[in-house]
Image (cartoon, rainbow, N blue to C red):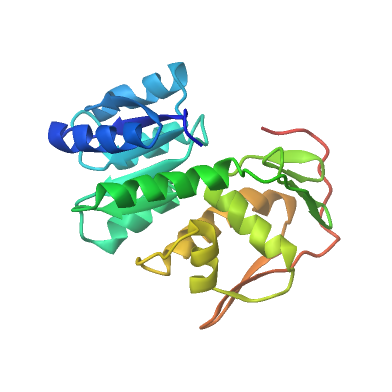
Length: 238
């Protein structure tokens, strides 16, 4: 896990330096940027292993930075925010962030979150292919195919699909899903899982017309149900 480069996007220099010190002590290389409008071009030119992204930035707001990055990259993103409204956190997750941390925070917690998200992005143990109808999830390649068409998922979306495809039809509670995805005790809002579900549904929808393949079970959570009669697609997509 060590050796990966972490991009720290934070305009408060003292906070950026503390994060840098703790991450480098944990074995990570780091780069720091203080303006949001410099981030998308930097990520395209120097793809990091993970981004720690503050929301309150000069030049471009962190939510817009996240939106721009997701147009061309699925690099793991952890949002760091001083905003107390849960809506702000939900918006960040719906834009494709993998996790969020609220200020003030413990630097050790940030390092733990970074390790957990990177584990989801690049599992250390060999995986296998999980197949359900037209869906094939390859853990080793971190790839999902539907009717031989590649769909691009964030680490959290990939992990969510892997959990549900391993036991199709089973109802998973929100707390169960968030616990398995985060890989540690998550003291946040359980319904953040709804944001990941929404994004995953959107990416899979075109392959399953008129089907609700990830179904909400009122008061409990979600289950994956795949029928075998959608319109087949053959063109490769990225």
